[in-house]
Image 1 (cartoon, rainbow, N blue to C red):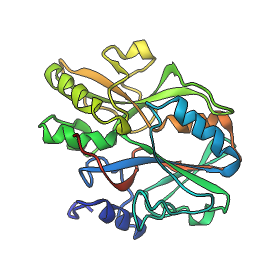
Image 2 (cartoon, rainbow, N blue to C red):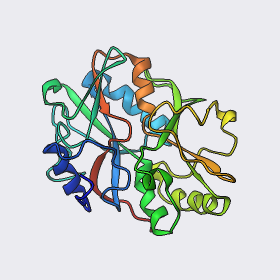
Image 3 (cartoon, rainbow, N blue to C red):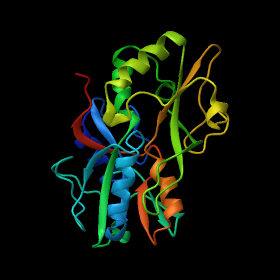
Length: 259
């Protein structure tokens, strides 16, 4: 896989379908918006939509499917949500039971798919500004943490805000904050900067992803994360729900550009 280039969203999705790619998507298809995936029975869709509207920082909506339709043509003409992410998590009654590379065997005619913006989408802007993104340099998944910040509940959906963390020297931290603020569909500006204890985070113990590369003098910067709905699913306990595996995003044909 290391020798294969993934310059476009279509190339990433094709690689997922053929089993060529089952790894985190940070740094792939730069300039294309990546998305978190949440798939729920239609009976839960209205409440989950309200959850997203009430929590726009962690859950900016990029697209919503028709009931039972695995396609999202507004995000990619050839897109099929059953195959086009590198890895998925299946939840039963709020508990993660399976991690799979396609969800054909789990698909139901009452499913509704939500695609939510992802902070990976602003990493292109950071790289183009020569701001180091350390988890990409190290070939790791980004570090993600559950915080002590509550989300706004909607029906059965509630739970803590999840954040992703990237560390920078102070000058680059300021530049990263400014650049990300121009991309609200990729979570926009950070929700916290500095002391992780203030939001209930231990940097050495990520809840999702890999341990971060933090260097002397670094400033930790925390963005709202699209894994937040997975905490809400654990709270809501639907009989079945499917999400992307953390860091293994759906890559869409939408552009992630700063105007």
